[in-house]
Length: 298
Image (cartoon, rainbow, N blue to C red; front, top):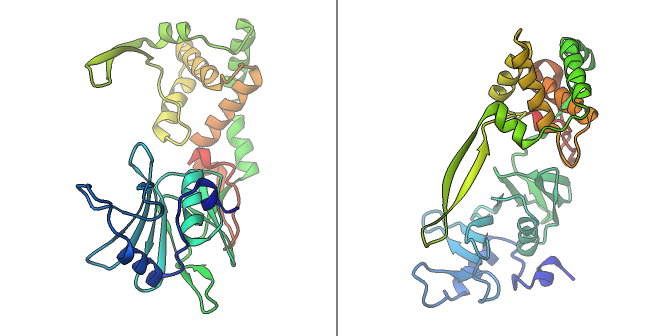
């Protein structure tokens, strides 16, 4: 049973621009809609729709969220034979839509939609990808942009890590003195303060009280966040180092916070802060999809 049959979308495969144009021209709009809507599949599934760009002649196939109405994915058939795929969200639904419309196998891997063609597998991120049938009527990628993954430079990484041996000892002592790496919300509020605000919800003017800790953000991929943390680490004031240790331990907490988790978080912070020194880029061969182990730093 195909994916399209499984979710009962009613979408028939569209093999080229001519078939997509015919589908658009032979599909009657749903009556009573302020904005014209031509269903791509079953008429009671209007979140799958087909449209035409009157300027370019492109045929546009959409999937929108069933309740939200927001676009999930789009497939554009162009008169020159190109097909442009764009998943607005990395989701199983977006991958299923590609399979429903084109018959191209798609799945989710490493934060992207992956499509499988005769020439290999390719990432389809939110920037989209353009494919076209070759002389054998098989899809191939047009203007392929090589994927790049990051690898660690061992020598440079060891040098950078050694610069923070003193703070590692400080962090170890901090955890041993407390007997745990866990940091409570009460401690975070006492150290960094908190903000209370009324947040509206619903259509009746109701509100609820939101209480948020003012702990500085610690997103590995944001240089400003890492710089703020390492300013505290480099400070001669023990209070600043204490704050840095608290931030690292609180970020390491998942189900239970351990010393090793805290050190792992510190190491990721070090790598992210010095990413220009410790990482190198390696190009992935066309048709191959490799997980970027260090994408969190970029």
